[in-house]
Image (tube, rainbow, N blue to C red):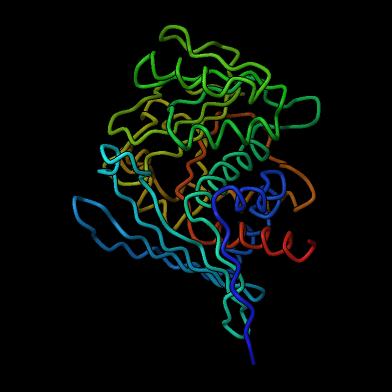
Length: 318
């Protein structure tokens, strides 16, 4: 019997298969499935490569689908004019183990990470059609900043987005390259963050806080970039006075450098699924914005499985 050739999708094709709006809904479902142990997603295996690079093995299984993400992260690729991340996400039939399709790993990672941030916005900041966040601040000008800008453009097209880079020239170049993605895109002028900012998203690999403002009701702070205990983007001043949420409670204890360095009491840190379970899949959130919120995203293979669910459904409908 001749088996059909496994379909392999490049970055552009992968992006088309997993639009942000559908991906946010899939992550909402996957967050609850993972919390209720309907998705098995063990901690990722990290294996060293040359020059400080790492290979990451991240499997996840559910009754309807199994996936394995294998990606290599090589920070030394910059001088080589190569991307930092290479790899693939393979989707398998959960009954037979047969390979169904293969997606571009960096694209899946970037899009599901940005979609998780958007789920955080939907859960903690987008209270209704009347009260949607209108102004975002992105701290960072790399690939994840672009993924997040694209997600905001798809889900909040009327938003105004400010960008803060490690240097003003970086923010200016980023905005010049991607103007048109949202209604307004500007580099942050000066060091003062406008009072009107509804959502701050930190997207750097910094080892010192890039955001340490007084916690304030009505401004959601999302940390994405710091993924090791040595990294920190959000300072203790903000964290100490905020309600704390994470995407993956298990992984956050080992990877959320912001929370680790702030010495948080993990008993007070809740998973986003705890809010989603209470609110139900068909609504946004029942959590009133009566206190400041920090949402920390560290990622896990369950979110890659959610992306593969979206791709599978798109391929089935084609």
